[in-house]
Image: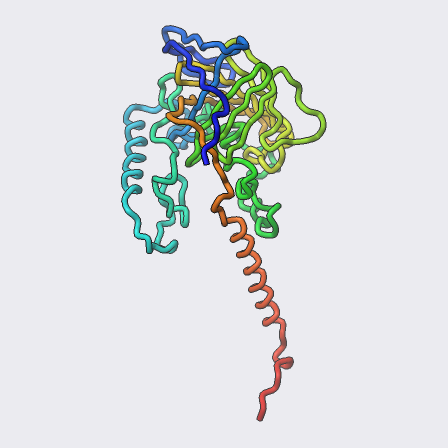
Length: 358
C-alpha cells in the first residue's frame, strides 16, 4: 500500500557547487561559483524533498586503495562496468525448480548461500560510484586517511557472530530488524548508510523539527531544532537527535543510543554529529563524525552526497508475508527437541532396555 506524501516537495533553483566544510575530515576541493541554497518559509536552508544514497561505494575503503580517496577513471569504469555485467546476468530467467543447495556460495553484492536466490528485481544498491563535488570516491570514511574504522580499544571486541548465539531462544533475542522494529543495518542511522535496497529518504521541515522518513522499515527520524538532549534515561531506537542551523547547514547531534541499534559495537557513550548542506539543486552533502571513547581511542568520520530521488518514498510494510521470524523460532524448537531426544537415547543404559523374549 502506498504511503501519503509526508510533506510537499519544495524545488530550489540555480546550479553549481559550494566547497564543503573541512571540519569533518578531507573535503572536496573548492570550485568556481557558489550555489546558494533556497530558504524555506522559516528562513532555514531548504532540505525538503526525496533523496537517495544508493551507491556502489562502501563505508570502508578496500585496502588496495591505501590512503587514496579518489578513484581514477579506469577504476570507476571497472567498478561500474562489473556491476552492470552482474545485473545483466542476474536479470536472466531463473529455473523455478532450483534448490538452495544449487546456488553459489558467493554471488556478489554481499549475497551468499540462500541469499543468492535474489535477483536484480529485488535489490537496488545503486549503479554508480559515489561522487563528492564530482570526485569519484573509494570510501565514505575520510578520517582516518586509510578510509577504514580505527582499531578498537584494548579489551573491546568487535561485534561478531556471538551476538546471535541466543537469537533463537525467544523473539526478544532476535535482531530488531528481524522483528521489523527498526531499519536493517544502519539505513536510518545515524550514521545513515545505504543497503542493498530501499535507499530512499524524504525530508520534511517545520520551524522546530526536521523529520526524515526512511524507506527501509518506514522509520522516521525526528530531529528537534534548538532542543537539549533528554535526561530521563530513555534511549530511542535511533538515538536522541537535536539540531541547529549554521548558515546553509543543518547540524545534528545524536546521543542516548540503545544497545539494540549499536553502531559497530558502540552505543552507551556514542555521539554522532552530522551535517546536511544543500550543495546543488539535486545534491545534499552529508558529513558525519563518530565518537565513543569507550570503544575507539580516536573519532572517525567521512562524507558522501545524497542525490535527488527519481520517485517518491513508498510504505515498507515489513511484516506482510514475512514468515522468517516464526519459522526461525520453530526451527530452533525443532533443533532443541531433536537434541533432547538424542540425549535421552544416549543416557539410557543397555540394561534398562526391555529384555527380548526367548
